[in-house]
Image (tube, rainbow, N blue to C red):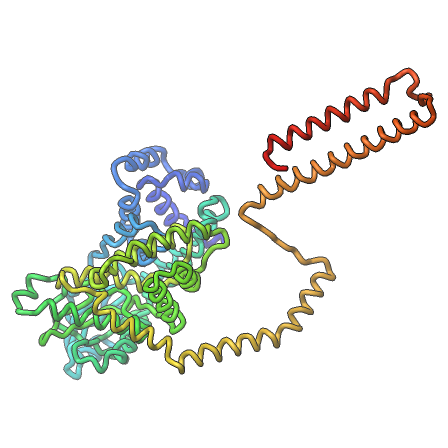
Length: 560
């Protein structure tokens, strides 16, 4: 642990300095890192000045770009999580720039030969030394195999896995420290967020994983002649080198070139939407980053998807929950909408169900009178994520990635064909999803699954009951009972118990006084102990005063 911290000290200082430069020094101060790493006061003051000139989202984006590949990629991945990150910050994260200077060809040659265990000349007939694209994790070169096929070779940057590994370890340490010291960090479970982002980033570093993603989507679209997925050449692919078929086309964000080439952008838009909806709603495995630069227009108005580092998975169970949500919205049933949201995500115990119901009612009413063809996917998705964020409902990563994918596609389509309605194209897919959910075979499978689960529960019940009994016998059972108005309830209970105690004392006093009065009356004498003291008279005065005081208190309370 000590060696690791010494090794990370320089990079840790860079990260803390960057936090401070961009106006987040107060966080580092609360964590006690400004003194430990001796951050100059001028940097802290300069960081404070930036607060007034830039928004929080802009400062976060600049901070991430300042720290390089790891943080840029984390920001890009974080932009797919609007359920845990506010919308204004998301809007800045999508602007993150990933363009960097290419690394030298000598490094390219060294990495390729080490990974393929052969010389460059023995693998490729032609290998262009100048990259056709360069990003923070790797760069792409145009090449030709010995067999004549033209390919695109993606090579990972030198030592990038080590650099990213160091950054992730430091971030995870910072997240742990933050949760130990800061209440808001514990509330938002910063460690879990960092761990999720780190896992996604590590998957992007494995080019073999990207190749498998590509082949799986290729298998899904094999019967669609309008969609092309580049072929993977596995004999020239490793975790750090990816060789795929070279596909030449026009990026969908090059609108002028598309028009000059005579493409019908309306047809291209329909093809893109149909393909993505098929991947999401029917196949359950989809391209997670379909921005215009990752989709090419090909002759005969075909399209090709590129870059499969980020993909999403929607399980049959999750598709079922999505269908339930859609049905509930169509039926204008707030309670069913809440049930569907609850099944989709992790609803915290502290959620205010009353306020959640109000927000869902507002969401339902907002779209109740909107014509189906005029509904905005982006607007609906953003509204749903806003509700989730407001109530700290954690949605599964793949579900938020699905929402981000639909938002991206809506932006692409809006430029290609502003009149095209994604909702209208999605209608038959939605109906198919609902019909699939109601098919007797699928209903029977769900029932059988539930029967099996109940059977396992009943089978394990005696053992579970025995374990609970053993824990109770040993006095180790702890019951934690909480209610939203528990404190108020306890206060009322205390007041009631105090009143009962006071009433019992008063009753005892009254009985004692009655006994004294009766005793003196029957004997005709005063009790010796009180011979010089008017006990009976004073007792009657006290009892009468208390009686009228209680009567007045009851009248004031308005309750008899």
